[in-house]
Image (cartoon, rainbow, N blue to C red):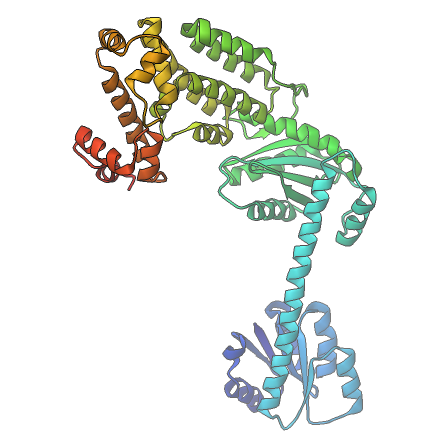
Length: 505
């Protein structure tokens, strides 16, 4: 805090400074003035939190100085000193909302008590300011959320506008801001967005949406959309991970939902474009569609009947989607997660070949958190390539061996999975099946199952979030001890040693 002492007697000023432990009260900056005129000049740039002033001073007396002070520093707290207990001085002190009146000769304990009282006033006012600012910010966020939708409660809107001082009938434009990296909290990003528009003399209200998106209503004083665009470009130069979709200008808050619809369409286009950062309507037609349901049946047909053509079909699909830009990110993500799930259900062993993915939930989490369609494309093309390689390998097998491999894919987690179960499933004797499987694959059925479980366990061990006993259960071992022995025999390392060596422990 900052303290100003206005007193024409030097020894009184020095006595106050030296006799009171100001730093104990959080006062770190102290200035002195010899008269009211000098005190007023200092106050213009010093902006004192607390002012201790004598009433009887040359040039400007304490009352005259205080009257001028409260106009330029309305938050300063006044403590008057005087050797004359004059009723008129007391009345003036009360009128000027003085915190206290200290009689001379000065008692330093009285001064300290008066200073404590002033500090309490300041701290309480600051606390209330923080509470009011927070309340105002929450009300603004509430208003922003309400205005997104067509059906609005006008009474609530009018009341919030009245409380926050936001004009209802002014020009506004909606921008949807998307933080693709999402490193900051919603609160931090909302403040960052509002502070930017405030620095550029624009009123704004902002609220968080979902997936790192923020809905901001920005004042457009003279329907100057081009100027708002320039501001957006300036903001994006500072915030490299952000993307902005702009709406159009409306002349009242009740029409904001129409501007929002356009801004939302535009921010969705950023999912299809890694280079641009600002999206406006330009020559694009507002055309949001639902996913064509025939895509699912097309995918299934090609996957089952002509898997060799799946990569070509997938490549063409991505190209078409990027050209159209008419599906929401959520629709795209749901579409391709469905495709991925169908592939993995058909070939569960493929999950072991995907980097840092251990089950369908991991695949879903990855796809949901992608920030561009190109990330999804890279992932899906890798998955399709693995699927085609597996399908190609299996195409050289007889139907019996293919059915056996599919059966193992579906039942490898069962600890009691045996050759007899598999032989019964394909209606062959165990001996006949064993010979047939070895002839076509080059390994025995038992070796195939052991290798299958072993490769999966290695991948799970690379993920520190899986416990050893969980891995044993997921890979079809009767218990963790048996798993550890089998793993050691196959790799010459214990599961714990393997995990440590691959950097997961």
